[in-house]
Image (tube, rainbow, N blue to C red; front, side, top):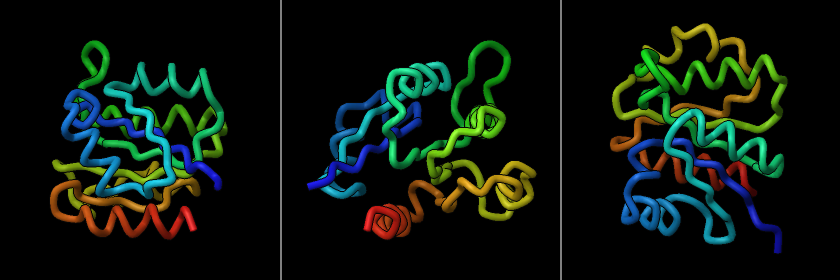
Length: 135
């Protein structure tokens, strides 16, 4: 059976063993393999090690390197777009609304984005979007 490879870029999930375990058992298909990155630097390192990710779940707001600590996820997405990366991306945030993300130019311009979900409020939607993409 095909193993679905997911890169999860989220500082809160990556830092907490229970959150990682819950994410793998409750959100993603059981046939999937998750790699967790807690920063943009870790995400870049994981992508340099493997080009075999089917999907990237990207938190929008997480600590960045140096002074850039707000919307580091969108900055990372912009870099990936310039690098012409092909992985599909689902954006997530606990601190951003649908209206806020739809106003972002990168969201409008990127064909790799499958959707956006608010982490706590829309976990079932996120789970369904991943399953639809996987199938």
